[in-house]
Image (cartoon, rainbow, N blue to C red; front, side):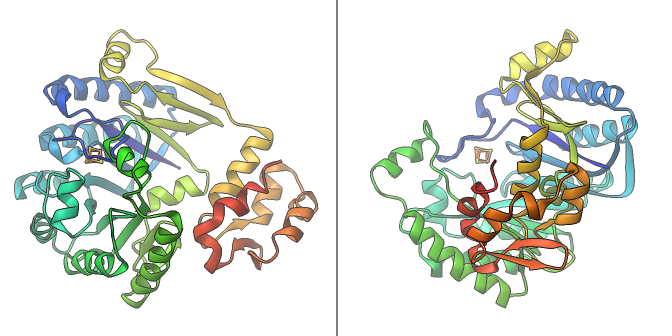
Length: 369
Ligand code: SF4
């Protein structure tokens, strides 16, 4: 069973914090890009013919900015080339202000059954400062068009002078829109993005301030019926993202399109970040990958631990011992002892205690041998 990721590298405009492979000026190349994408999907299906696809995730960029017929074509191509499970979870990322009823109808007609809306904040001044294309009202209009569907929303922490009360209001707005899943990430000011200057000028919240807001919002979300199942992800029971869970369980996935990564047969590889380079490679039957690594030995073991400990389920010790022909308790006796304050054993599973999950990086690093 595998996940399939499709990258759409187009947006209306660039957000001030964005470091993703998205190119607003290249949107005129959408039609040619999709032709290449369909071709790569076919090529990957021949390369990995036994793959059974359990989840599909169309991300970006802003997939909803292009004509819906291209998205529908990509899904049809996946279904034609791969074996896709009947109950597959099929998600599309959408931005308010870039969808309409016709687009949504077309998405649903090809089986898209989960909608991840980039809300980020419910405050128009903050949205404007981030150079987002939408307002809070646009979010509600968008959510209203998706009434009754499985909807997720992304929320950002750490914005200029942001308070916990403001984030609570953002959560309220998301819930008013019928959202059953929230991904809440701390803003990372990447070098080269406009917001990095604000970070250097000390205009963004400190890590400690963000951690305090995170704790308050985690409690608030729980009050509202959304439990945390991974450090940045919260859901009403039954609405967890299957696609993301596959990543955290170190399951296999195939990524197609610019900058997409894959992990299959123990190999992790990533496509070029440049649209023209990607299209040229696909057209001339060349390899669009720019990196490829066989992940084995200590690296594979650490990945299994690192990804699993991000979730509230933690890692299965029996599975670890079987996968790596090892004795976890013996191998990590010193770490388990040193970090016992932060860890908890729940039957076969080892987990990070609830109150320390947000600072899991420091704990996890000790498992690196
Ligand atoms: S919508 Fe997303 S991908 Fe597009 S510019 Fe903004 S942050 Fe980047």
